[in-house]
Length: 182
Image (cartoon, rainbow, N blue to C red; front, side):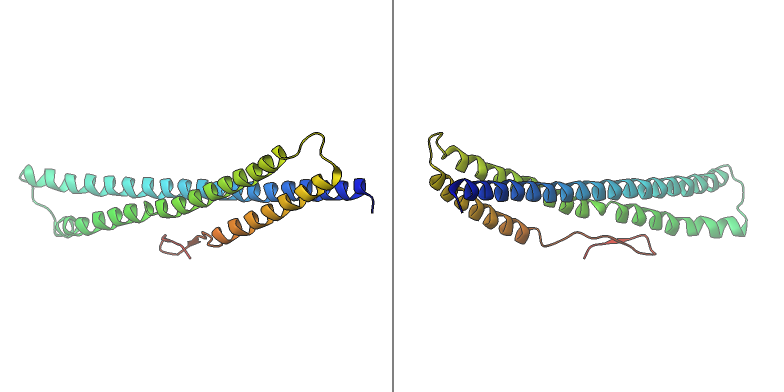
C-alpha cells in the first residue's frame, strides 16, 4: 500500500472515529437533558398538586375554626373531619417532600451529562494537542505515526469515559407516585 493510501486510510479512520464518538456523546447528552426536563416537569406538577391539596385542606380546616370562634357548634361529622384534616395535611406535605426528591435523580443526570461534555472536550483536546505536533513539512510516515498515536490515545480516553459512565440513571414510576433509582 502506498504512503498516500496509508495516510488517507488513517485520516479516514480518525475523522470517522471523532465523528462517531462525538455524535454518540452528544446524543446521550441530549437524552439525559430530555430526561432531566421530564423529571423536572413531573416534579413541578406533583408539587403543584400537593400544595393545592394542602391549601384546600387548610382552607376547610380554617372554615371549621372560624365556626368555632364564632361560637357555632360543629356537627359530629365536622368534628370528625376536623380531626382527620391534620393527617390529611401531613400526607400532602409528605407527598410534596417526596416530589422534591427528583433533585437526586436530576443531579445524577446533570453529573453524567457534564462528564460526557468534559470527556468530549478532552477527546477534542487530544486531537488538537497531537495536531499541533504535525509540521507542515512532515512526511507521510511521521503523519501516519502521529495518527496512530492519536488513535490509541483516543481509544483509551473513550474506554475511560465509558467506564466512568457505566452507572445509569433510570426512573420507574410506581403506583404510589414515588420515583425510584436503580
